[in-house]
Length: 167
Ligand SMILES: Nc1ncnc2c1ncn2[C@@H]1O[C@H](COP(=O)(O)OP(=O)(O)O)[C@@H](O)[C@H]1O
Ligand SMILES: [Mg+2]
Image (cartoon, rainbow, N blue to C red; front, top):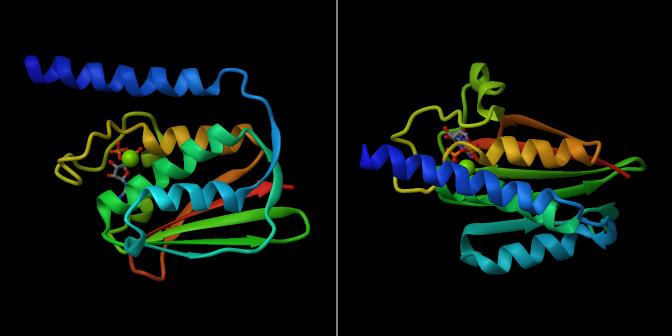
């Protein structure tokens, strides 16, 4: 009973924090590299490799994008040990890959893990505070920018999360 209540409290808090962030954030022209570098500096550097395109200027809601990326980095470091962040730019869009060396996700779970509160198995990342909202929030944020998130296998043998944002 106590555990259930604690779990519900964490779910609510995580959701409320998300709702608060989404509220009326202004769009700004920023270089995504700055957001990525800021985030990487907050984690143990030797666990995150980066390969970034020089100029990733784009109109976005910076705090939302930051939250999205930090959810994905958190996952990579919770379910895997090391991650690599790769960014690319084409004429019409910017793509960001977040690769990890964890167990990955079976293809038949790709759709499910995007759903709120869905977790593949609770023993994964047991000591982490996630409640199954990380990916669905990340997905929401990217879609609200007109982009898409897709999952794949990563060259590091774990999960690859592919973000694509229109320019
Ligand atoms: N990088 C990853 N590697 C392996 N499994 C993952 C990864 N990211 C997410 N998952 C799986 O997808 C589920 C949903 O992820 P998420 O929405 O972030 O929730 P949470 O991390 O809070 O459990 C996780 O519980 C986990 O089973
Ligand atoms: Mg998570």
